[in-house]
Image 1 (tube, rainbow, N blue to C red):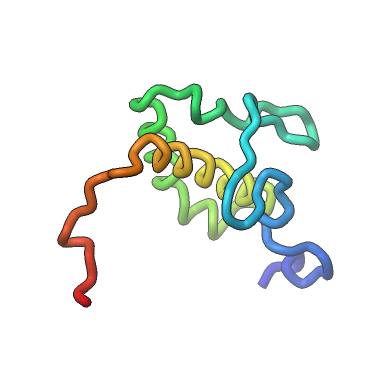
Image 2 (cartoon, rainbow, N blue to C red):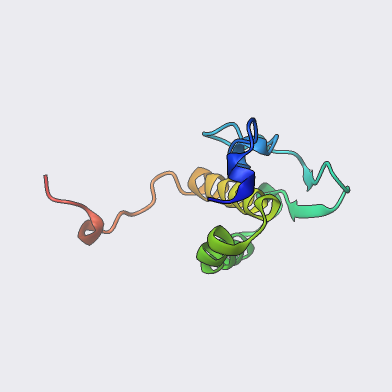
Length: 106
C-alpha cells in the first residue's frame, strides 16, 4: 500500500472528491478543481453523443494506467469524470440493448 493509504482520515480518492458521494456525481455546469481553479471537464449534458462516446473511450483506454500509477488526485478526478460521463450515457440510453452473450446463465 502507498504511504497515503496508511494515513488516518485520508480515505479513498473518490471519498476525498466533493462531487462524489459513493453512488452518484453531483453535477455542476462547469467542473472546476477547488485547489487551483483548473477546468477539469465540460458538463457531460453539454456534449453531443459522438463527443460523449469519445470521452468515455478515452477514459476507459487510460483506466488501468491511471489506477496503477497516477497520483491520488488524478485517480480521484478520473473516477469522478468516469462516473459523470457514464451517468450521462445511461440517462440518454435507459433502454440500451443488452447483448445476450454478456449475460450469465441462471
